[in-house]
Length: 306
Image 1 (cartoon, rainbow, N blue to C red):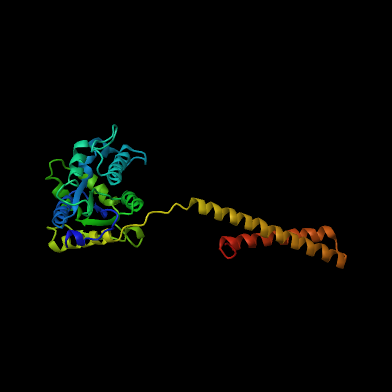
Image 2 (tube, rainbow, N blue to C red):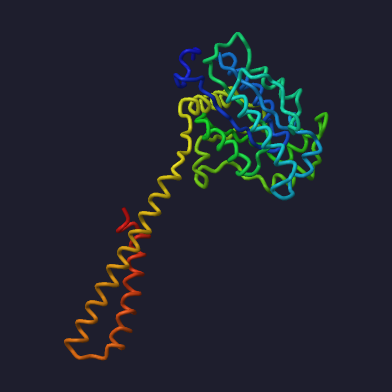
């Protein structure tokens, strides 16, 4: 597919955030490098966002602590840098003071997107390479894509635990085997049935060498995401507040009408039948409580609302 024929929008270059998830040493890095090369051949601007390179080693020890750990703050910092680039790709590449990611690694990552050979309207692809073993980790990327109306997709790189541990031992900086074993217990692969936002997800078997067919499947998935960007969340706070006030006014009005009707009927009945007024009023208030509850139920069920 030629550059000018790639899916996208007219007002800016189409962008896709592609999450690569799976166990350490499953084959994510090999897949990302191959996909990045294939994307470049299509005339796209592509880069691999490798979390292991961007986040310093000391941060990895806090993965399983509470939600305010350094680990999570570092992950947020990676997404913040991506967002900063999306907001202003021509801005200087310097990282703000106090940022929690490696400056040299980020510089390499971004410069891969600034190739002057590729036109500014060429599709832009971020391949996010990390374990992403919890859906909540992947959902943060989805939120960023939705916020900026970007394409979003996921590739689960599948490989058995024994092979991952074996491959990992041959790495320059291997992850402790017990960490991989624990991660395998916790890993939740993309599940579109449970999480509709994971609809654009596929699995790739990386037990052996990844086939050309699998690479083609990944590229087709990314093309689909590029041509179908997410819709941003609409801020309807003011409308919700107006609806709430309208609903509240409706409840008060209907309760007032019910009260007036019941009291009028009760007084009329008491006069006509010469009944005990106190008893009649007690029964009236019981009916009033019942009517108010019915009114509230109808409004909650939207039968009388708006």
